[in-house]
Image (cartoon, rainbow, N blue to C red; front, side, top):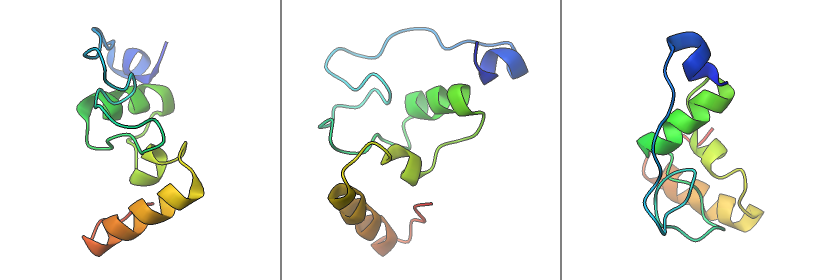
Length: 82
């Protein structure tokens, strides 16, 4: 049971489309970040952690070089990563 069930009495139902990431429902290389803006990712993350994800959370599984490249690109666009 996750936070959505405990706090709000709701559960995530359904599947992600075939060929997409099971966490964010976006087609991306496994070594790249999850789509932090995907509603699927946001609600799955909230259900597990009780808070909304950051870009740092979406990149947690990535290699350090990927994190650095994404952090730089996002910050150039005015997006805070932490």
